[in-house]
Image 1: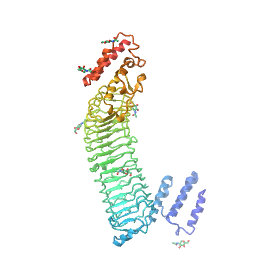
Image 2: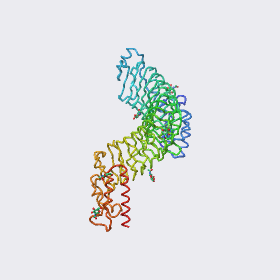
Image 3: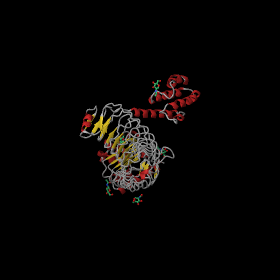
Image 4: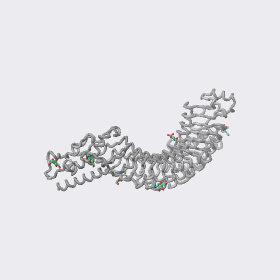
Length: 586
Ligand SMILES: *[C@@H]1O[C@H](CO)[C@@H](O)[C@H](O)[C@H]1NC(C)=O
Ligand SMILES: *[C@@H]1O[C@H](CO)[C@@H](O)[C@H](O)[C@H]1NC(C)=O
Ligand SMILES: *[C@@H]1O[C@H](CO)[C@@H](O)[C@H](O)[C@H]1NC(C)=O
Ligand SMILES: *[C@@H]1O[C@H](CO)[C@@H](O)[C@H](O)[C@H]1NC(C)=O
Ligand SMILES: *[C@@H]1O[C@H](CO)[C@@H](O)[C@H](O)[C@H]1NC(C)=O
Ligand SMILES: *[C@@H]1O[C@H](CO)[C@@H](O)[C@H](O)[C@H]1NC(C)=O
């Protein structure tokens, strides 16, 4: 087909030859013609397309299935395309066969069992699971007192609105894993007893607001893995007994404030893997039973004006698990979680958080697991964990931390697992880990640490595994603490991974734990002063009258005598020694 004239001759003339009042084609055929026109319009240059718009209005005026308002939509071709597909699936639904709904007599149950699917009169259930059905089997008898129907894993694209008519005792309906792209709004109208409705893994784009309104006993609704883009705000109205809603893995962009107005019993809500940008304060306020809330893998915070309202989580006093990972959150305000006193797990992994208010976690007295990995934190706000005494697992890997202050982990008296790997830590205060008396697992690998501060792992009596590798450990005299610690606790190295020396000189590539005093401190001064690496003092003596042995011995005493005070003094003495040598060389 080349032009509108071709189109007219081929489709319109035969169609209207006998007069418009006697149109012998059915709705589907007329729709096919409209689709042809659409394809044609897409290929036409602009001028002709403009004429085409006028032409199409005429055609659509005749095709009864296409309402008058459709014509104006044609200016927007993708939208028009979508409308055509919608109407097409609606018509397909009308043309779907319905199976034989019958009384629940013994005889009818016998008929039920003789159908092509499995019908079980004892459990009053029916399954046509995985039988490649494109439509429901027309000859099948379905007694009205049926309790469970499983039509999952077939090729159903839609259903007639009367498919479940009168099944007032049905409790479970499984339509998952089909190719459903349309549900008549009154399909579930009679299912007053329905408890579980599974429609996951289909191709639904639009859901009529009224679809679930009559399901006043429904507990579980699984709509995950569909293509829903827009949720009507009233779609769950009247379904007041819902405890689980799964909308994961759709294309939802909006989360309307009144969406869950009637779901006061809701316990689990899975909104993960959608495209939600904003969480505006609203109906979550009354959901006092909600235990699990998943907004992971969305786009919260994507643009400047998309964010989480401060009071969005207010009222979720039973919430145990809050998933906000894989979003674009940049800032956490002090009040946002303040009512979540029962929260146990908070997952904020993979956002862009660079700022956390010091009070953000202050009220989370039950918080057990806090996941902050893969964000942009460059420091830990003061007092952040002061009230987090229940926390047992804290992940901060893949952030931008450069140092740790003495009080950063103050309050974490139950912490057992701390992940600090893949940051840019160059140095940290020797006292940073001291509050962590219950610490069992520690990762500080993949940082920029040259030295482990003297006494850093002191007092961590419960420690089972620590990962220290992939740091540029500098193996001079100051590595004695690390070397000694590894020798003493080699069994505690995570997966047996040995930290390696980055330098100086030919010590690079050696395992720190294998180096002894002579290896580390021989040439000490040269290395400390960044002179040519590892000049062995004893063999090629620097011409100075100074005898350093006293300093060394003093230093060693403090290292091997591991009381904290001694260690700190030891550190000072080293600095004094360095200065002395510096003065001499200068
Ligand atoms: C429509 O026209 C056809 C022949 O053109 C005729 O057979 C049929 O009866 C007509 N239908 C109505 C409803 O007038
Ligand atoms: C929701 O559905 C997805 C995919 O079907 C599944 O992985 C997830 O576990 C479900 N969530 C809940 C809370 O059941
Ligand atoms: C810790 O919790 C107490 C009691 O709820 C509260 O008064 C205090 O302000 C909290 N501390 C911090 C640092 O937020
Ligand atoms: C990390 O911090 C540095 C310096 O403060 C900054 O330039 C850089 O952008 C930060 N990187 C990230 C991923 O936040
Ligand atoms: C350095 O002094 C110590 C005593 O303080 C002495 O035992 C040692 O022999 C001296 N070493 C050298 C090389 O002079
Ligand atoms: C440890 O310290 C004590 C007292 O400070 C001292 O007597 C002892 O010699 C030291 N031990 C070593 C190995 O330096």
